[in-house]
Image 1: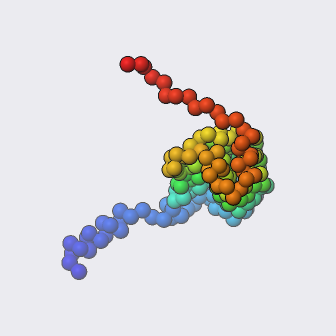
Image 2: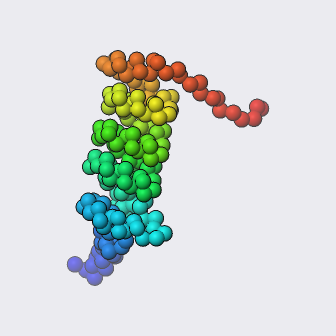
Image 3: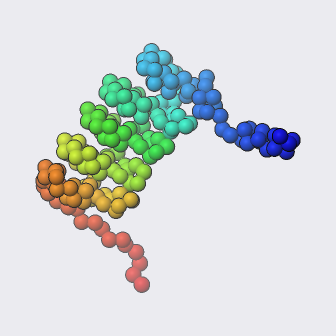
Length: 200
């Protein structure tokens, strides 16, 4: 192997980012997220008890996950409620554009939804592609989940970016689920305001 090739390969290796664990291991944010992952409640309490700490919303440098994402993925209602009470941001997005509420809906964890809503999760905040929590609930064919979101103020007419369809559109298209169609039929459609601007 020529000296030039060896130098080029060394440059590539040096330019490559280290794994997230190697980048931040030993830091307070790494230790906090690891304690949450390992369900070490005493360690989490100790870290959050430090005065002036805003570590609760720290995000994994690889996935963008925060503590709430981690506990939502394991359907841990007690931990979700605890973190929300400690001030965790329920609208934090991971690298894939998922909020904790979107993750809960994707996984069918309906028990977490009321807690996240109570903790100020935005029921209209869409993920990648603009799919709102309500659109995702409709696509799961989960009437109870959809009703909970609508009762919390979810916009039935907000459209996604991919197909340009609203939750109502998706519900009405799938005739296999008449209960979902009926749910939306009982909600008056909101008129969309036209784009305003100067008249020429």
